Structure formats: structure tokens, C-alpha cells
Length: 119
Image (tube, rainbow, N blue to C red; front, top):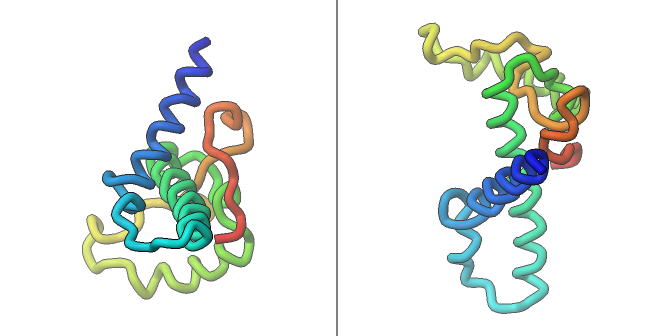
């Protein structure tokens, strides 16, 4: 029963991220149903990735390969040094294999968000 509430909370966070607390999907000015459906699919993909990054930030022991493909991790390892700040507070505190560690899979798979590999 507790697991259901955990899932429910994650679903609530997903919809909050899609709505006014995040992507503000409700403010779209699109009129066609097909365009709104495409935007919703895109917004869901982005919202899942955002929540994976949040979960990775809150659980730095999760490996980055849960949220990012090998190619995406390579890209991040090239870009990260160019955007890190000069002070310790402006720098990413996570090692490269944990950088932005996402969610899902592993021993915590039942409590984690679905994996997103494509975006």
C-alpha cells in the first residue's frame, strides 16, 4: 500500500512539472488536437527527464547511465568543464559517472521514475 502512495506522489510531481509548476503546458495557444497531442508527448518526455535529474541530484549514488546513454555521457564529459564555474559553489559536485544521475532501474527501480533514453 505504501508503494502505491510513493507512485502516486511521483505521478503528482510529473503532472505538476507539466503544468503551472514547470512547463506550463496549460498555457499553450495551440488549437489543433494533433498539435496539442504532440506537444503533450514532448512535455511528458521533458518532465520525466527533469524529474530524473532531480532524483539524481537528491540521490547522488545513482549511476548516470540510468538517465543518460553512453553517448550523452560522453557529450556531458566534454561540455561540463567548459560550463563549470570558477568557485566551488558554481561547480558540479558530482563525479562524471554520477553527473546528473537519473532515476529508475537498479535496486531502487520500484520507487524510481521510468527510464528515458531518447531525449
